[in-house]
Image 1 (spheres, rainbow, N blue to C red):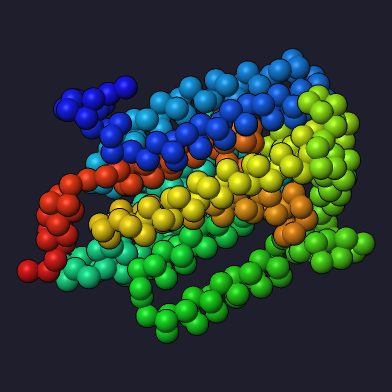
Image 2 (image 1 turned 180 degrees about the horizontal axis):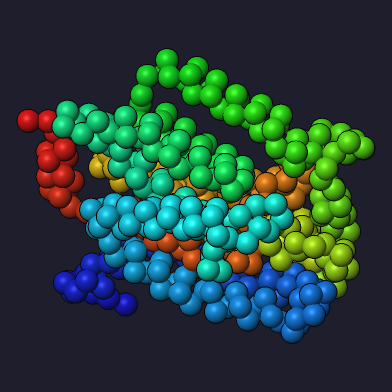
Length: 379
């Protein structure tokens, strides 16, 4: 334990962070390792890899992820903005490089140098959008205009990959920040029209998007191009597990589920640990989201309030989308379950986003907040 009288950087960090939130994130990481041990071995064996290949790699990914989380949680709001700007620029450059030189995987070019840059783009985009909206009242810096320009600049490269799941997620978070920033409602019609037009264009011009939507509406559609095998198998997992599951390692449906360790790990949870365990996992996610939103609402600094709300919306929406796909409530999006699904880019980028969240949520003297607000006021 650290004394409140101690004045070191570590002591100051300890007494200003949300320890309950960090504990909940730690619980998710532990759950994730347990579930990777359940879902990973069958996939590894099908691919001819060592049985615990994905478990060992996930544990290795967690080491830099935890380091990134703690390093970013020490940052001040100013340094959070600077770090986000650097991450955004590097991620955008890597996305363009992936479009030009990356290998095509499942019809998309999302990977370069073994990483998925779009994962790191998301938290950086949220921080920059929050910064732009927070600065919207300054005469010398047209923050609202920058926020409006930032959205198309971010989603156009994602659409070109194509990655419509990430595009939708980023757009929804931006729209949430738009409402929180209190901009005029007259923009809602215009933004909504653009969004609907974009979805119609994707439906008309992109075959796999049209196929996913048709298969979701009518699984018996013969003209669709996307197979529903994974969705059907995921639902079978929940039915097979019942309320209390078959027991750790006793699942059988997971052995034929192709993405059991990534996009459909929630279904494996249902089969081996039951619906009760799924509800507990949902409760942990809900606790993190609600605590983050309440803390954001209480924050007096405009940037910190918007950044915290945006980052927690990003985390919550991604979680909800993944679980909804597993339950066949929405079409498949190819999105991971935060800190649960296997993936190096995913877990490190989530650690970056949560580190940013802890940093902007840290308790600060009111004098410091007033000083920063006075700096933001027009002369």
